[in-house]
Length: 239
Image 1 (cartoon, helix red, strand yellow):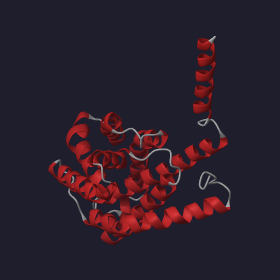
Image 2: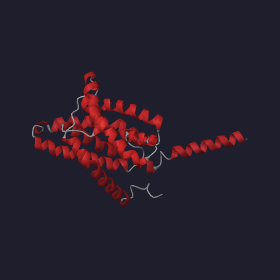
Image 3: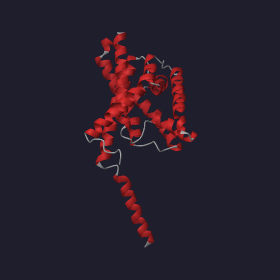
Image 4: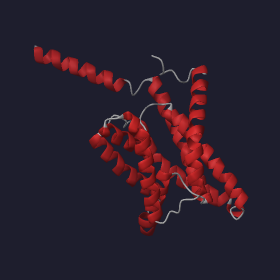
């Protein structure tokens, strides 16, 4: 009798656990997350196209693509997926708290969306690429897109990107949340150096992203939060 009761209780707990992934709120979170990742991917493709520098993690990712994957005829999207998959495995072993569906979406879609956007840039903007002023304008446009996408993505709270999860996992192991800023600076420096050694030259875009992405991300995240609450799309805060 006790075994049957325990079995029923276990089944109820399992149904309760999985039911949260099929409710309206989680479906909306997933859709918003995909929209945010799509915008991020397009922003990355613009930054790759104008070739004026990428953010630290993409600097390393693109370096791996240029040195290892491209000679093997592996697309940037597949290269990014494989690299971030290795990161996620490492994070999952040490601290799985920040891993979620959003992590999987970012890992799976960002690189392929970037490939798609890069193809469109080559198709539509080929004649404009020789003008430096146009490339600078597109660089800032790419930074804004990445900031907008990140602001949308982070409001879902269904898992952070593989790179963000890495920094959080290291901080958790250190045991001091205040160290996250310094951990992030350290990982950024390692990524830029690694990307440089593998053929991805940091540029003015890397510096622009270092100074402007944070403030723009905060602005857009707060803006979309307010819009989402007013439109009753975001319903998962203050419960």
